[in-house]
Length: 321
Image (cartoon, rainbow, N blue to C red):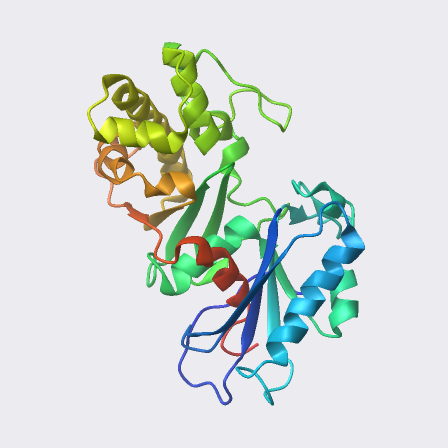
């Protein structure tokens, strides 16, 4: 297994590099083939076998075989395959950890897949793949340091420096979602329980379900995060207040990232990233919490949407490597 990530499209390749990216999700496994310029050549998806590790290996291998034998890659030989996984690999054991697809935890996923496919593979956390995709040819293209944020069912993050994923010594770089929400005040007194066993994690405030839960606590009304955003846009004062609390908390949490990492660009992904208000309010609110006289970090919406994770997995292979 090779870790890390390479830069994106580059000039001077002796031969075209055909890449396949795999996004191993909880409900579906998606595969994409791209060329050196990031053009999509093929895409397939299959349901993720629930709770069945061996069937998951077979499904991934079947997707790779189907794409390589298809018309887009026919005759090109084995492609370079990158795989985005939930969770991360333990630096101590090489086994997967922290995956919400629990049948993968404690398994030698990398070694087993390399044996099944008969080649070296590259792996990264799904949030790292999102960040890499957006750094290579997405909303953060050309920026030296990109912090990619997933605001969805959970909250994840990934760091890309000069076109390469920063994994960290413990393979948890960018996992800001399981830090405490900083500078908590009276409106944060609920300190919701997190699945990780702690309370008040960033994830418990900034995920999509967390936004809905905050609205329910404040108003007694059960609305989805999408409905809260729609209500705020339509002038509902309760929804507007909930969304403002969300933006203020996100500003505090991201200010901590800026103080530590000082990225050029922060790219938002996941379902909550579709709320337009975030890009206006958060940069207006994070200034007092950043240790600088001005904040030039840009907060931007992702370019590749739901495809970013699988594209980033493909970009784990550089133009040469």
